[in-house]
Length: 280
Image (cartoon, rainbow, N blue to C red; front, side, top):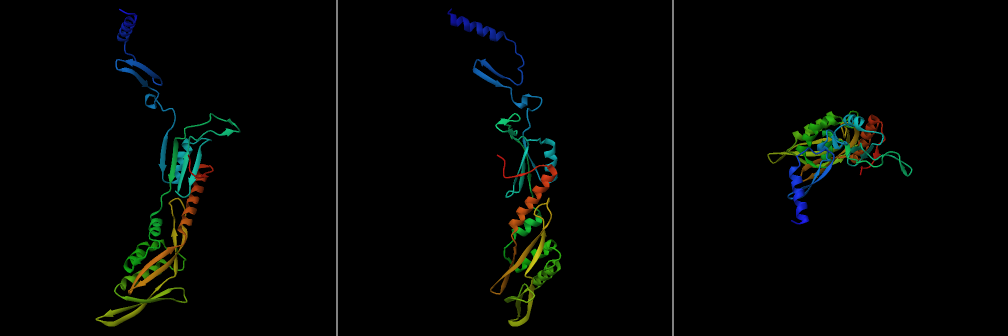
C-alpha cells in the first residue's frame, strides 16, 4: 500500500468515526463531502436570534404617521429629503455618520437601507377638477359635472355655487335648441343666444348667461389647507351646438406650493430640516 493510499484510508476512517455535531451560527464552514467541498454560511440574520441591523422600506400616507415612525427609529445622523415634483418625503434612518473635517466623527459609512417614505395622496376633489381642466364637454355633460361638483366652489367669489347650479339647470332644460351666438356683457358675463324650432317653425328664443370666471376651494392633499383657485369659463359654438370647458389658473404652481406646505408640516412634526432632492 502506498503512502498516499494509506493517508486516504486514515482520513476516511477519521471522517466516518466523527460524530455529527451542531454548527455555531455566525460562522462559515468548509466541509469536505463525497461530492466535493461544500461551504456552509451561517452568518445570515435567519440564523440569529435578532437581526444585526434594521432593514426596510416603509410607506406611509400622512405626516402624522411619518413623524411617528421617524421619531421611533431616527438618530442624529438620519437624513430627510423632499421631492417636490414627485410629492414624496423620504427619511434615510441609517444614513452615513457625520464627518469632522477629514476624519470620521463616528464609524463612517452605514448601509442606508432603513427608510420611511411619505407619499402624498391627492384628494378626490383635486383629481376631479384637474383631470377635467380644459376638456370641452357637451352641454349635458357639462351641466352634470357642475351639479356634481358645485360644493367645491369657493364662497365670496365672482360666481356662487347657486349661480353655477342655476346655469347648469338652464343647460339641462335647453338640450334641444340651436345656439347662434355669444357675446360679452358689461357685467363680465357671456350671453349665449339660442332658438328652439317647433314643427318647422321658429319657436322660443332666449339667452343663457355664463359667468366669466369662478373660484374653487381645493386642497391638493389631505395634509394641506385648501387653496383658492381661479377658473375661467370657455365655450365653443359649432353647428348650433355649444361645448363648455373651464381653465384653471396655474394648477401646477398650486400643486408644488401644497407640497411645500406638507414638507413644512413634516419639518415641524419631526424637528428636522428636510433637504430638497432624492436620497442615493
